[in-house]
Image 1 (cartoon, rainbow, N blue to C red):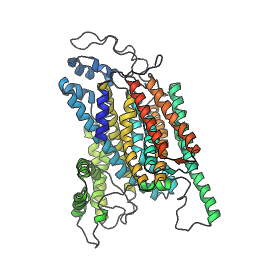
Image 2 (image 1 turned 90 degrees about the vertical axis):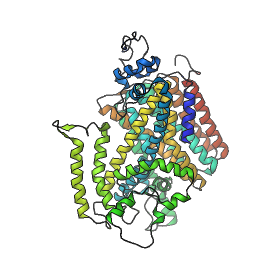
Image 3 (image 1 turned 180 degrees about the vertical axis):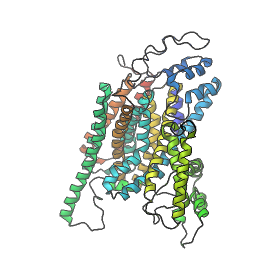
Image 4 (image 1 turned 60 degrees about the vertical axis):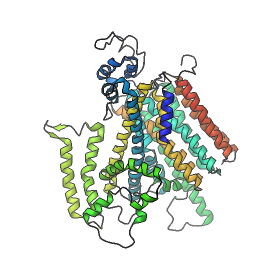
Length: 591
C-alpha cells in the first residue's frame, strides 16, 4: 500500500514545478534576500536573482546546469544535512550523473519506506512495551497511563518527526504540514473508515471533550502562524494545555466511577481504579501495547533447561518455522525486509514485559544490552558528534562507553542466573526507553532529510510533503489497525485512538519542537507563511473539526455510513485543492 501511495504521488510531483516555502526561522530571515545575488560557480557566470526571499538556498540547485550542481551543494551551507548521517544533496548531485537521477530518486523512495517501517517497528515492539513496563512499575492507573506514556508510545513517530523537522529552519514546514495533514487524515479518512466498517454511536462526553481540546490546539497553532512568531511562554503553553487535558480525563473518569459506584454499589476489589471511565483509554490500552515476540504460542508445554548459548540464540530467532509456513507470501516478504531491523533492535534495545512470568529476562542478551545500548545512545545522539569526540585528542568517547559497558555487563552476567530476573531488572526498561527513543529520533531525522531532498528535486514545498508523504507514512498504520479493530466489533476503541493520539501529537509536536529551537539559543521562533497552501491546510482542518463538532451531535452522536462517506469525500476534495494550489493552478491575490 505504501509503495502505491509513494509511486503515485511522485508521478504527480514530476508534473509540478512550483515551490512554496511555508516556514522560515528567525535565524535565516534577513539574509536570504541578497545572499546569492552575486555568487558564482567555478567556470560559470554569476547567479543573479535566483533566490528571492526563500528560506532554503539549496532549492535553486535544480535551476543550474548539471555540471554546476555538485560544486554548488558543496559550497552552500543549506545543502549540508546537519541532523542526519547522510548528506543527501551531495550524495545525489556528486555521486550520480544527471542521467542516473531517476535511479537516485527510486533509491530514496525505497529508503523512505524502509525508514517508515523502522519507525513503526521501533515504536510498537520496543518503545511502547518499555513505556508500559515503566507505567506498571510506577503503579499508574490505566487512564493515567493511557493519556501519558501510551499516548507518547503511539505518537512517537509523529512527535519525533515534528521535532526533527523543527530542528532546521529549512524543514520546519514539514512539521506543520505533517501535524495538520495527519490531523485531517485521521479525523476524516480513519474515522470515516471506522464508521464505514461498523456504524456506531460514540460516547458523547469523551467525544465532545476531545474535540474541544483538539480545536483549541489547532486554533492556538493557527494564531501562532498568523502572528508569525512564538515565544517561550507560548511554547510552554502547549505542554500546559496537555496537562489540563490529562487532568480533565482523570477528573471525568473519577466522577464517572463515583456516580457508578453510588448507583451500583462498591466495585469489586480486583477491579483496577479508573478502569471503566467514560472515556475509552482503558480500551485503547490493549490496542496500544503489542506483545513482545511472535512465538509465544509455540512455547513448550513441559519445562526444560536451556544453556546460556541456546537462550541467547533463541532470543534472536526472528520467526518460528511453523508460523512461517502458515503465513501468506506478502507477510513473508515483509518479514524478510523487517528481519535485519528486528535483529538490530533486539541486539541493542532491552524490553521488559511485566505480563510475563520472568518479565522477559534474558541473562546473556540483557548483559549484551549494557554494552550495545549505551553505545547506540552515544553514536546516534546529535548524529554521533559526541561519540566521535576524542578525550584530550587521543581516546575516543565511544571506546570509553564500550569499556564501561563491558564492566557493567560482566558484573550483571556473573551475579545473576538464567531463570530468575534480578531485583533491578526494571532499570532495563529505562535503558530500553532511552535507546528506542534515540533509534526513533534517528529514523525520523533521516525521514525529514529524505523528504527535504525530494522537495528540492521536484520543487515541492515542505508543507505539501508534510501533509502527504510524512502524514501518510505516520498515519497509514492507524488506518489499518483502527479499521481492523472496528471490524472486530470495537469501533469506540478505534475512534478513541483517533482523537486521543492527535491531541498529544499536536501539542507535544509543536511545543517540544519550538522549545528545542529556543534551547538552542533562539529567544523566539519565527513562522513566515509565504503561500496559500498553509492557510488552506489550517482552514481545512478547522472546518473538518467544526463540522464534526456540529453534525455528530445533530445525529445523536451516531456515526452512520453516509456520514463516513462525507468525511472521506471531504478529505479527497481537500487533497485535490491542496495539490492544485501547490502546482499553481489555484491562487488568491498576492498569495
